[in-house]
Amino acid sequence: MGIRYNVKDFGEFILLQFELDSGVIDPSELEEAVAKAPPLPGNKGVVISGRGPIWLFAALCHKYHPSQWVATYDPRLGAVVVETHTKKRRVGEVISTTLQE
Image 1 (cartoon, rainbow, N blue to C red):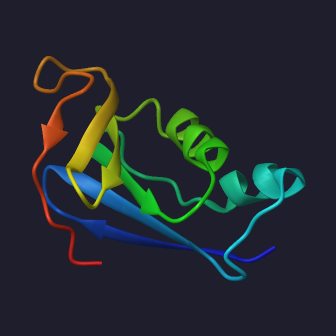
Image 2 (image 1 turned 60 degrees about the vertical axis):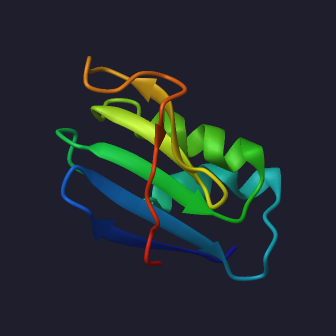
């Protein structure tokens, strides 16, 4: 299984961008893919970006749940907050940003 992660600090949040080497992933590879995801500081938000199945996004959101907030990146909208532990961000909020990936 080939998955690569790239991490970039945008100040308020950390961008976690993933890329699947073959463009696909099998559910049997999910546990290993999540284990390979790097540890990130919990005092910032996390924006997850990449081309992959919804269940991979869900598992990564779960891994980074302790962060201040978690968002998934939609290139048409920006970063959409899907969970939060701070009053500074709310679920469903769109953070207008263009990520230089």
